[in-house]
Image (cartoon, rainbow, N blue to C red; front, side, top):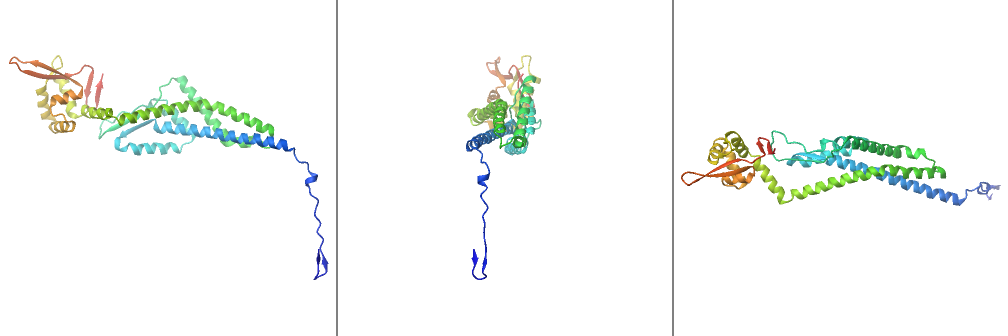
Length: 313
């Protein structure tokens, strides 16, 4: 190229293309490798999702295996439990699951002795023998190790430019899935059982049976009814009977306000109706010499009734 003003001439020479001097790999080999490599990446994602599902199920089982407290504080307690497990690693989750779900810690907790309101407790746990526990412990340890291997060591382990390495990686990922899948299915079954239990509990709480049960529990644990049990146990005849009028006099003496409030709250206007409603006592009628009737009550057989404890022996 010439510069007319200066009279200078520039010559540009292009180097020959190096494409012709280098051998290109056969297109069919590159395509096959790409197919296998893509399949390895797909299976890697599949296995990662499997481990994430196991982790989510462990968190669900731990966060929901037990809940206890006063009704007004249950929602906040539930939220704290979920937040606590959300930050835990899979290894920590496995330890918590083994300790809490496969032991008696998952059972409903007993209410405190000095109750200050309506107490609610629900628990989910499995009673297992030592062989089953060790089997679960080993299977979950394997899952944690396989997960860590995939997340932290899989990529450096394989040559993604080698067909042999990619085929071996493909087989490895299939084997890893087969190793972990049984425990995934086992945890899925536990989650399903827990969800069924929660659903049945919810249906019960929304039913009339729950309202009846709650009213009965409130009645049985009231101070007047507990006093009735104490009177029957300490003042009963050989057959356990106590004159109803005697019990009424003692309630007026020792718990007048509580008895009045209980009658108003429960809707039972007479002591006789209240006693029948508790389902804890039998009524016995005896004729008098003058043709009248005296009413007695006594504890039903097998019933234990004391402050803080009501139930069958």
